[in-house]
Length: 228
Image (cartoon, rainbow, N blue to C red; front, top):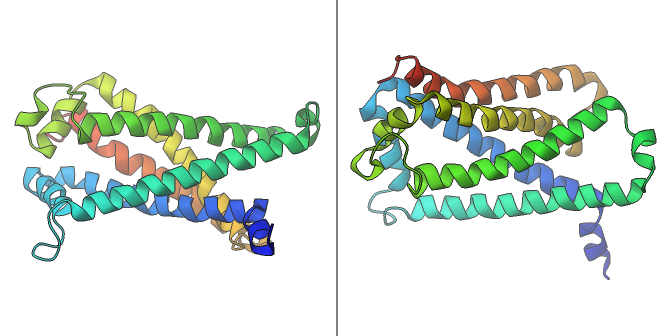
């Protein structure tokens, strides 16, 4: 095994890989949430945004090429992120041994790790459901999605309280994941110095809150009649 190969297999390298892929997801989540907020501007604004995603560079590349390239990049990053997370978890479990878990982990550490771990599983399940719901239109709630535009699909879906709840739970898990991941990524990349920890923690909490509010405001707006 070469020195470069050994370096790539270290826990530090795996953590950096996880941090970089995680920050890419934070960028995607913020961009996605920004698009959802356009629901408050009406059908023309939201449907126009949805159309732009499918053909952002007319006359330069064919429609849907950009979106599929972005989806491929997102899928690759997801696979890398999950692989790195599982690899780190298995290494930590092996290092602790069968009886070291209670002795070497504080309650706060245990809570954080379990929240991120189970939150990650919830998010993965939610991603599959979300794609089947709004991308492939396999699940159609509230009407015939094929006869509707993107704005109408959102209204038809979140006019049902149970769908708002079904989305709120994984979005809450996502917000917690972003909060912890933002903190961990900056720590891994060397930005989380002692004198900055308070401010980085506040920014991480703010990032989680922004993600939750940005994704849930449109569903709540639809449910309570502010968007129709």
